[in-house]
Length: 312
Ligand code: PBG
Image 1 (tube, protein in one colour):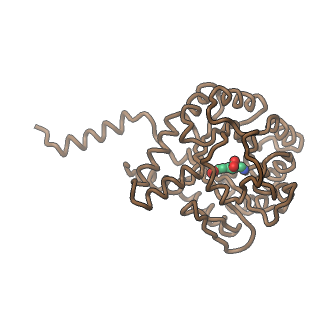
Image 2 (cartoon, rainbow, N blue to C red):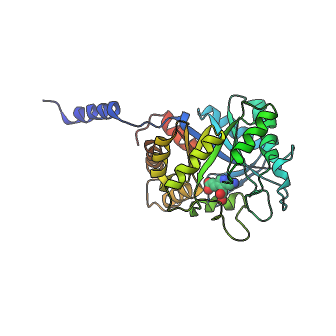
Image 3 (cartoon, rainbow, N blue to C red):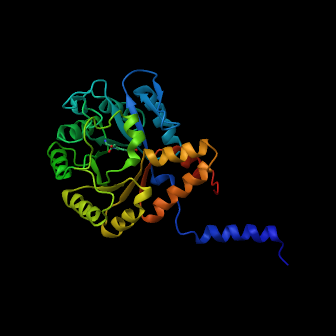
């Protein structure tokens, strides 16, 4: 007769063997907000555990991220001055361009992705009039991937052509191909102070009711030369991730956005849910749906759990 505790242990082993999906640190991409100054770590109220950091602090973050085994970071710049044209976005000494160069100097292996969008840089908070020069200035600073996030048609091809003609063939394009007009971005807009000052983004972001349109957008960006296709947000769009995964050959990334993070953190602080377990369940579901890569504010916490083989 096998005693109960042993059977339980054996069952855990079997579960481990037949598990269909595994989350790996290799799948994670950590988003960070970078600003001017020195020694700055300004907490973001709606995103507990996240900060707007100056470049010297960003380098420390990058070292931590790399030591946890996380292969990549995506950087969002908070400019000193916003103006109508978003001029800091494409200036050689813009905050993101300097940040990329500083991190690359210390940890060249850490993959850096930069957001190519104007909403953080303009005084009106809208995304459009994308400047290819912004993508080019990021590539020149050493970014491995540029991530156009404005959802304007044709911008992947325009960026691809600019990069090729300027000798940056190896700079990849992570396209925010499928980006919904979602209320899950609330905390990010506080973090980047990028809420539109008039109107909304419904004319260039997708209607949350549409799935077929998502496939169309993804195929268009594949056609235009994207290297990775991203779906954003993640949690409410698992069906979209699943469908995109089965429609294209390129790697699929899912962006688990600020609102997804903030909800878990807030409920955890109230003691209403078990935050770590919920975090792992969410990330695993995104993987199970078909995402190859996950951009998540939980990346460091999840990496620690994965590293320690904690079964949550
Ligand atoms: C636009 C951009 C946004 C996010 C990433 N890139 C904001 C928006 O579309 O309003 C949101 C990410 C998040 O909520 O975590 N530059």
